[in-house]
Length: 109
Ligand code: 2BA
Image 1 (cartoon, rainbow, N blue to C red):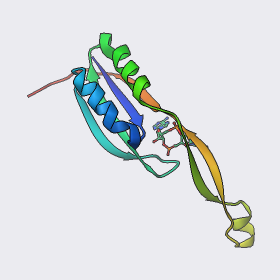
Image 2 (cartoon, rainbow, N blue to C red; image 1 turned 90 degrees about the vertical axis):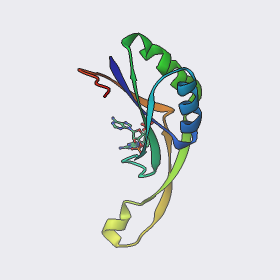
Image 3 (cartoon, helix red, strand yellow; image 1 turned 120 degrees about the horizontal axis):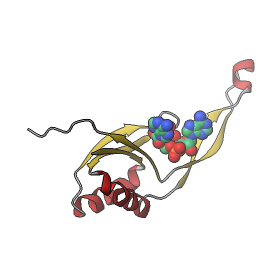
């Protein structure tokens, strides 16, 4: 058995949850925060048989879109001059970041 941990954007999470549950996969949704943007994102945990890993990744590929996000960051002169000069930086946030990990044991009580 494998555990798929997929970090996706909040905007895609609802559709992906629906797509996976309709296909019969068990999913747990966690509200998470990205370390870099410090903005909300969604982490889905999906436990599957190894043969279904590809199917789950196909669902994620179908639903999750790459988007550009603009963040405002202080300029490097801020620390030397004490003057705060925020400037916008555009980053591309991935459709999904996916980890597939081995599950030693799965117990359902
Ligand atoms: P964040 O950490 O908020 O990162 C959002 C986006 O900012 C990233 O998109 C990337 O394009 C950019 N970014 C991140 N760190 C950066 C840096 N040091 N310098 C410049 N740009 C940077 P993604 O790579 O698609 O990541 C989306 C979210 O997936 C991340 O949100 C984080 O929550 C998660 N993530 C990505 N890689 C991860 C990893 N290796 N381990 C755990 N979580 C990860």
